[in-house]
Length: 65
Image (cartoon, rainbow, N blue to C red; front, top):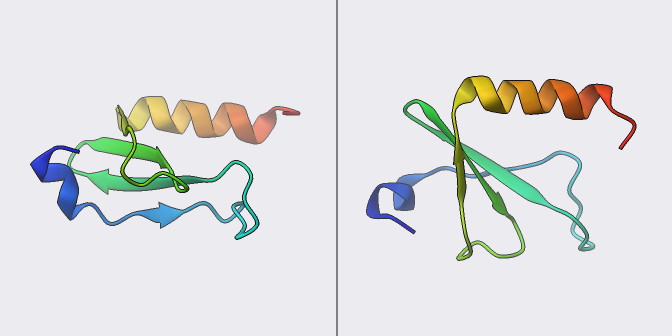
């Protein structure tokens, strides 16, 4: 994790549960959205542009995943 990422305030998905499974957390910093696996907070962090994140959320909301 980069030094500037240590100050991120992570928010867990409302669809995540305490029982395992696929859980994500997101954090906003400046002009980036950071995404990580909530079960592996020290693991890799995906950094995306807000417009790309918004497009992903629209797609995921509309899809029958």
